[in-house]
Amino acid sequence: MRTLLAMLLVFPSALMVQERTVEPTWLHRDLSATREHATDFTTTTCRYIPLFGEGDSESRYPISVARFGQLTVASGGECQPVTYPRQEEIYFVRDGSGTLHFADQTRALAANDFTYIPPGVRHSISNTSTQPLQVILATVKIPASITLPQSPKLEVANLSELKQQTVGGHPASVLYQLMIGPHNRARDRINAAYNVVDFFMMDFAPAGTNFPHHHEIAEEVYLVLDGEGQMVAGSGMDGVQALFPAKAGNGYYFRPNCTVGFYNRNASDAKAHILALRVYVPMLKSDD
Image 1: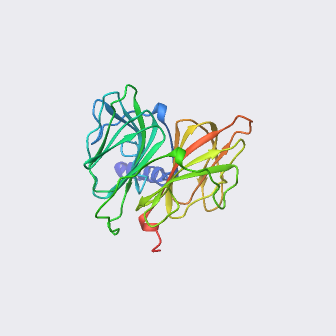
Image 2 (image 1 turned 45 degrees about the horizontal axis):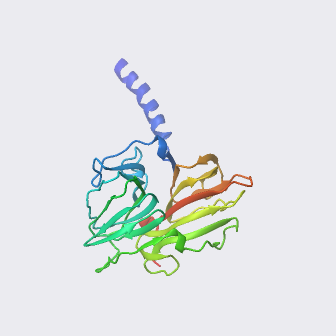
Image 3 (image 1 turned 90 degrees about the vertical axis):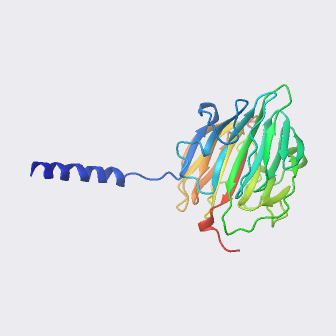
């Protein structure tokens, strides 16, 4: 009888704890405080710092984002070649220079270069320069229902080639550079992706904002490259806003329907640049 009474006292408490467990609608990470993670492409000279997805303590929450973080290749270093049958990748060179190996091709990489790696292509990065090479890496899952290309091509572009522009529905205090988008669209510099909606740079003027908003069928990642301000993250459907201090090196992951936005500082010298990735969530994606 005493044993039964003890069990009745314990189990309700455990159930209450489980009921209070709520999956986060957003995640925050800091590059400077994140540990390296060994994966299939890392070596002693090619190191990876995960922000979201593989290697992160809460990797189960991103749905389409398989990996988002920073790759550092030491002088004279190289990464292991990899091939992903149903994943597409994006590289953005944050600093340094190196060489991209794409199937049987090679292409030089420099600061602010970006490129798209289609599924099924063997690829890697090496660094023959005297300085470290830092690359922002994003890996995105492609649903089995999508038909993939038979003859993928290599394109490398630089941020300096892209004009800064406003985007409809957002204030003029933010200028956008549209880098990579879907293969069936002609808006971006490289139009080749399958599950990536947008990969772009945002340049915030002093006191600038992109207005808090949410995306019903997409998840999003923001990485603050420079500057500081306040990041908006929280419930999306009811418009609730929560503000969090954000500075260079801070990354934010937003689930579908999560409020997302940024407010730059209101000072004459307050410039801020944010690198953003938006990807479809397959089970929520419309048929069009």
